[in-house]
Image (cartoon, rainbow, N blue to C red; front, side):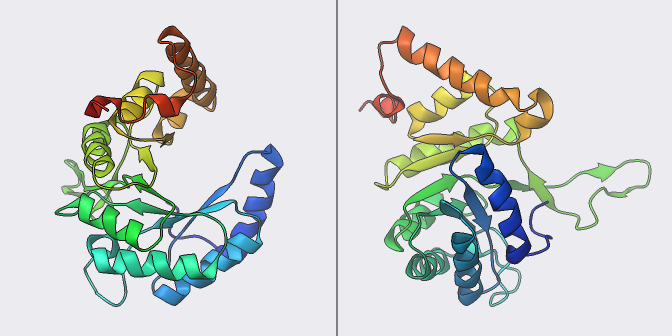
Length: 233
């Protein structure tokens, strides 16, 4: 998990190492208040992050039991506060554990988000039949990977029809076809996470080379040409 960690100051060292790869570094941050979000954002910006992704699915101390990402007004306020604190792009990572993700995405856009990521993990759990207890100490955890792809796809598709800012898709990308499917639904980029465990770091080159092959075979020069094509545009 990323939430229990040494803190932003220590993470700056990780950013410096990551930047040796000569690729843009997007720092994922969270906070327990508007001001803490802003403080952490300033720290990672000063540490060299090229952009910030806000984890808006963590508990908010001001509203016990309610995930921050479920409240459109709070999402808007967090994004607005962080935008006022830094100069680099700010991305809002959205949760599907809401009644209407479009409302939340629209609020993030109103707050000034440069893009949104859809989606974060889905609340789920598992029980050990031998000890007859939940496997996780916290009982509820986050489900990721191929299992959540259809849900994430639906969210990307719906958000695309309601906001003008770019969408980054996250959830179950393991090959170029998954990525292209997200592009057609409305995403401008994709994240890859769970697939690394199965296919190793080579998954990135496999996905990108596959996308390149698809683009050439269909006469496209850049990904933006197919973004949202499934909407008939």
